Structures are given as C-alpha cells and as structure tokens.
Length: 67
Image 1 (cartoon, one colour):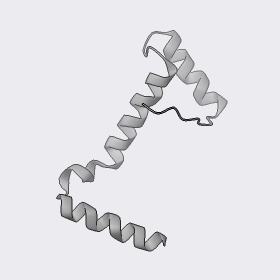
Image 2: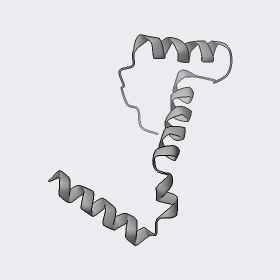
Image 3: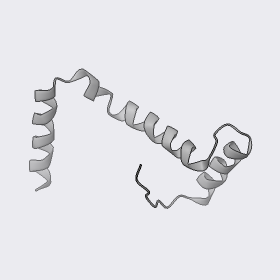
C-alpha cells in the first residue's frame, strides 16, 4: 500500500472518528479505504461491462482530449 496525504473538512474527519470510536471500522484509514472502494465501484461500474479493447479506446480518447 502507498501512503497519501489528503485534506478533509473537519466535519468529515469527525464523522470518521466517531465511526472508528464506535468500532464500526478498525481505523480511520480503513474507513476511508472502504468509502473510496465503494465510490470507485459505483463510478467505474461501466468498466466491468466493457471489453478490454473498448475500454482502451475510451481511455485513449479521454487522453487525447486532455492534451
């Protein structure tokens, strides 16, 4: 695993800490990892439905637009 630094609103950090204190998650890091996993699963659900070649084509198209 890689270590990253993020800035969170105090309200988010307090909510994560409450969940941690309640034992819902073993650590703040784990709570954030789970939340990020759920976010990516929802946002990238199309990835599962795409053929590899179609996904590569979409990525190339996106990269060309950004250049």
